[in-house]
Image 1 (spheres, rainbow, N blue to C red):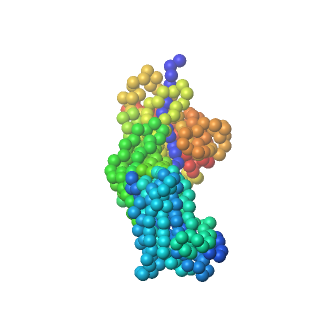
Image 2: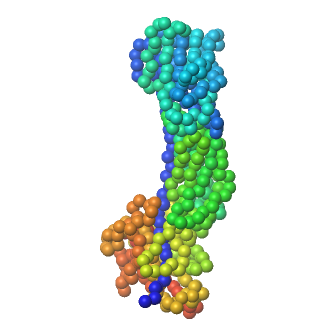
Image 3: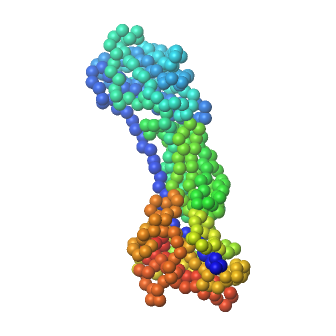
Length: 442
């Protein structure tokens, strides 16, 4: 038997979510008596060095804190310490570094009264890429440490390393060649935003970030525009002028020297995006092999997006005629789906005569729809399929659409409604999407 040809169709629901890292501040509350609290955090980072800020507080009820040693983890060299916030303008504090086997920041003649603090700014080589470890702190009432040491508050933030990036405002869906922003299909929307922070959630300024594109499902994408940036005082960098093509499914990866990289949620690049009018959505997209016209029941705030390319998949025994077709309906902010479950959703595919004529099996009956859904079906034989689309948790079905019954209702969808040739010799295929969900959820 000759092999039939099929039309490959991808219907997918994608929601991108970002994660932000809140700031965390230490407080002297974990010890009693003579107590000292230390807080150490990166304030800026470059490829070769990290600027740090060390704050030493006297949490004692009455004792004056005069001396302290801060010992760095092995392999971290303390450089250029400067006392930037002495307790008083007349303070005669002495700041020194003892390289030793492990570097020690030595503070003397501090005279910090109960409840007071001092701040020292220093630099270490590329802390975020160094081995993480805890810094050791000791404090005393006298310079030669002959008195009893202060207890170190266990809330002290003295562990470094594990510098991380995260997407605060991740990329949303966009049209190929237009700006990708954090708002779906809005080229002038709020830009993509990435934050840099240390292991305690403190923001890190001056980190040189770069974005790279991760293509999913076999589509080879390209990104253009400004893909590098530097974090400001808030630890955040924005990217407001990048575009991606061709249509398909992608992720962004944010990187910086010494930081753990961050990967955004999946976003879709489409060939077109049309705002719905009234209670309906309609749109058309064409490639050299086929044209897809869609009529769906959406609300007035919805956006219909169409595009070829996406995940690569197949139905056994059939040869693909068109590229994979992505049909999605989104709320105006690009975040989710909003369809009318009581109205039949129709998709019409036209395969040009020139393509049809390339095969000896050129009758309409030889064409099928190879369908994939990222959402589970409510019932029937389709619900038992264990197939899934890689990268999409919850995808449940890949296969040929069954033929609709003669008296079709919305509960029969998704199913193949009709196949015929028109007067021009084109093959016209109409199928019904799942009621209330173009991705098959009934």
